[in-house]
Length: 206
Figure (spheres, rainbow, N blue to C red):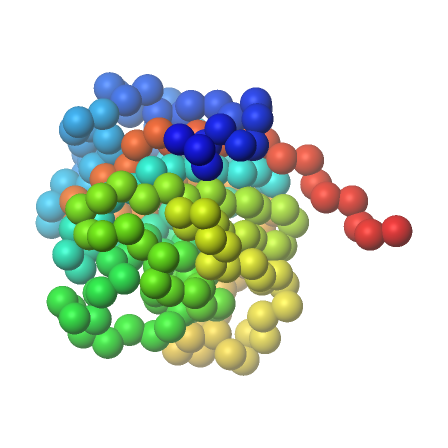
């Protein structure tokens, strides 16, 4: 509550806590449960708020299961794998994922820009508790704050394509507009209090 109160007005609730009205994509793979958006077990795909955004801030509460895996679709075009065709996918992942499911690249850990830039780890609340996250996207820069700590602050335009995880291309990295949503991966990760604020582009320093 303290973190939500500090930034003032301008945020819009984009999930009403009861239905997926205003959302699009793989809706059949999700349900509303306990005032939360939940990916159905064993299903997946991306759902998104059906209003295109360029620069914006998003706020969510999320709760993970052991080994839970989901993602935040950032400037998603509406089809395809948002980790590659969107600007990026920010990982939503149990901090102890490796103990449950095996090794991952550092750029797959929670808060990371998938395959591009690794986030700092160790700032989750205990498994089963709710976490608060705020994401700020301005131009090619993305900032992730988890439970009051900045875990990622990166300009994706500065990432050397030769360093991309697995050598796989990310054509969406140049996208300046798209949708915000959730990229489910079969686990019942829960999201609530989903808010967005359209953000004016920062002026360059004088």
